Image 1 (cartoon, rainbow, N blue to C red):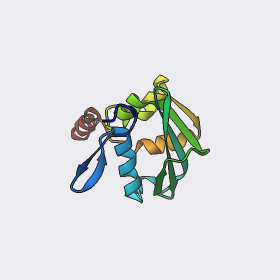
Image 2 (tube, one colour):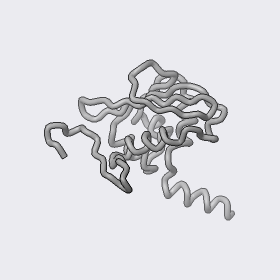
Image 3 (cartoon, one colour):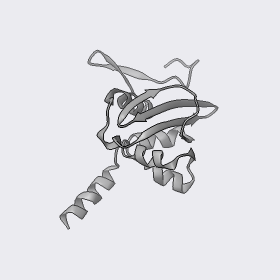
Image 4 (tube, rainbow, N blue to C red):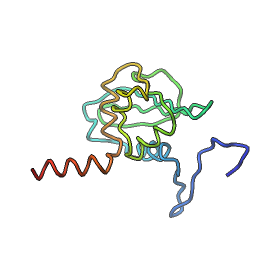
Length: 140
């Protein structure tokens, strides 16, 4: 890693393609490749994620239109803005933390339309513990 650019996203090559080793960047890269997400068929709006890492803020703008998803790095106004620490976003993007729970704890700030955050939560991976809990409830 270049020590002159400590916040540069690391990547590695797998099968001839670059993949992000940063969980947050990898999540948004994969989300951009989805194109259409049936879980969001009834959703329309823009959500900007402001990920703060020290003095640097990285931004991802997710636009949803009837389930069709587009992701960019534009810093523009959005219907919902979610702002939080990079370490927390890495945990959310890897399924180790829940975005809505983080907001309720005060770990993430939300401005604008909360409904978009609730819908976006469906796209983040579930934690292994919540998957096991859901499986137990189904068996009961």
